[in-house]
Length: 326
Image (cartoon, rainbow, N blue to C red; front, side, top):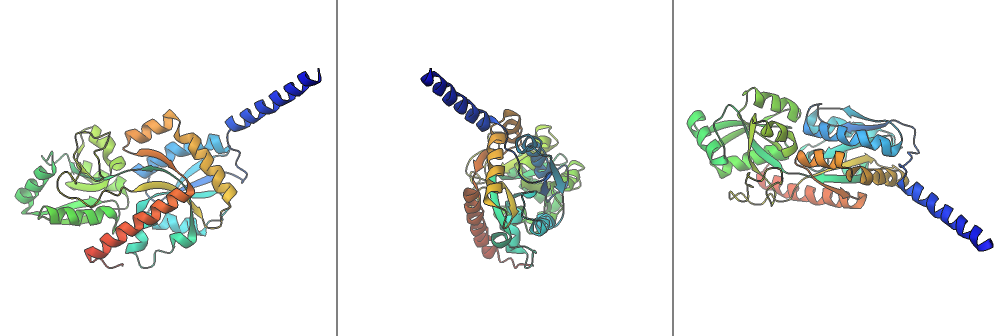
């Protein structure tokens, strides 16, 4: 009987442990958790944030709200993160531009990532792409190049989601490769750029695949080339720029969450644990993949390492371009 009671106690303890492992992470801080996004509603980053926020709220046990602080390529949102209390109630969902590139091209961005932020966790990588509007007949980069020569005398304007961004540098590189005089038209995010492309106010744009993919599928714009080492699963017929002879841009950008410096490790670990659970959900993974993201969890250390490596890559490219921080 003593052995039986002891076995029952052990079984109950094991069952309790299993229940705890399966239960949502309980957020110790007072809610809601605010997810800052540095771009307007309607763009790719905003859509990604809302997909994740909807499921993170269940795992954290508190409301998770998206707050758009658009402008200056995410600079306004990053400054808001720096000013936020390091209590876990404010995080910044960002891609490479604001964290890795913006400090290289702006003299006084108002924040220093290594000093003011801590990497929480990453969740995806993606690639940038060149797309043309429906008002052009181009179905390939060569078609677009020929169209610019015939319609514009070799001069063209290409939209980019932010000034002094990776897409803006890519416009310059593409122009040099195809011997075109291409000028960048910086926007305050991909949503207004896409509106002008859909209205045929601008003939082409460079942005992330998630920014273009829905309108590409609808036939309203055409993605004609992507960066990265491999073709994208959602765009199997679209060549990489490396295939077209423009190599050196195979290091792909990332998406991740960042928090104010000083945020306790226990808080970061709880958020990270919640994110791992969310990323395996089909209702999260499938739409993110369909948008052109390569979904994959990165720990705090992995995200920090990737951010630093990406910044070093683009510091070299920006220096070679002769660009001076403004």
